[in-house]
Amino acid sequence: MKYLAATLLLCLTTLPAFAQSVHQLTVDGPIGPASANYLIDGLEQAADEQAQAVVIRLDTPGGLDQSMRDIVQAILGSPVPVIGYVSPAGARAASAGTYILYATDVAVMAPGTNLGAATPVRVGGGGLPGQSDSQPTPEADSQGDAQETVDDAAEKSASERKMVNDAVAYIRSLAELRGRNADWAEQAVRESVSLSAQAALERGVIDQVAPSMPALLKQVAAMDIGLEAQAVIDDRPPNWRHDLLATITNPNVAYILLLIGIYGLIFELANPGALVPGVIGGIALLLALFALQALPINLAGLGLVALGILFMLAEALVPSFGALGVGGVLAFGLGSLLLFDTEGPGFELSMLLVAGVTAASLVIFLGTATLALRAFRRRGVAGLAHMRGAEGEVIRTEPTLRVRVEGENWQASTQSPLVPGDAVRIIDVDGLTLEVEPQKGDNAT
Image (spheres, rainbow, N blue to C red):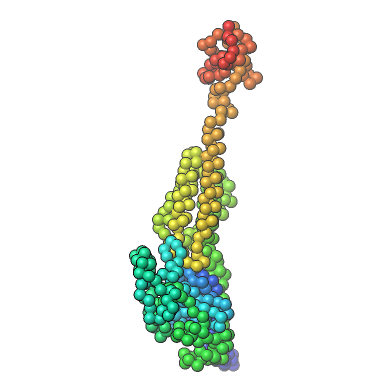
């Protein structure tokens, strides 16, 4: 009984502190699969542990559309109030970060921060800065700096228009849900405009400006969302799993892992039993495939990459004198350019990396093909292939023709008259008899 009472007392004393905690999640960098996984897990843990609120500290240039939508969906479905906080000074919530900030229950910015530039990224290329529909929004700048002409609007492709209109509808729905400035949100998408913290507060884009976490808690506690100003901040940084995922889902890292995997398998097939290239290549290839499934992939680019891989693997097994290898490198290079369907800040595949790898691979396979062709044309060093074309000297002609070739005495036959000492060339081998002919320039008698 005594131990039971002590246990109950301990639970009662620790429960209030546990319930008063505010979980702090930090996003410092591009929005991608790793940050989405981290925030979704953090929101679920906060709900399981009955935290008072979750503060998401944002400092991001933007990122991938699908990852942003996954995060927004998790925020909207969270039973725990979510506070978006753009911090510290100098931080930003650009592009995808603007959508996330609009989705939070309370949007707060630190002085010296900014948000905006929420224009979606064009498929297979850069963003659409400065492009908007021909009709300005009600909150358009009075000077008309960001207005677009009718001609500019007519030049947009249908896919770009669909993407911009979808993004506008999405961010307006978030603004209307949270009671924030929907017109400026649309302007941020169509015209890529940005706002400072104080300007965002004045235009109803955010709810508070707070220089620090204690100030944030004090200001938000007065908003009647169930948060206490004395709540304990429970920092939840990304763990090693999220850090690993963030590293391998970088398109350049995933691409390098894919290359290591491919060349590891090629070297293993070309040199069976080496083991080390095969083991390293297999691990790298599996990591690359895991990263690629988390990133937006263009199927045409993936098909070209797969075709290039098959050709390069076939080069290690089939003597094509480099034709399959060179074709595989070209297919792999073209597929690499098309591999990632959508690019975002921090998720661009380096064209210098693709060009360097393609050029180096071409040099390797062309060099291999050149060496193979030289070896094919070179006279053999053993067997009958070695004897054909070899030079010798006539030893005697009676009773049978005998010639010396590389220090060996051979029986020979010929259609031309020869005398001892004549230089001959072997033109064929019939069993142990050599068929010879006089060297050009010799005067047979």
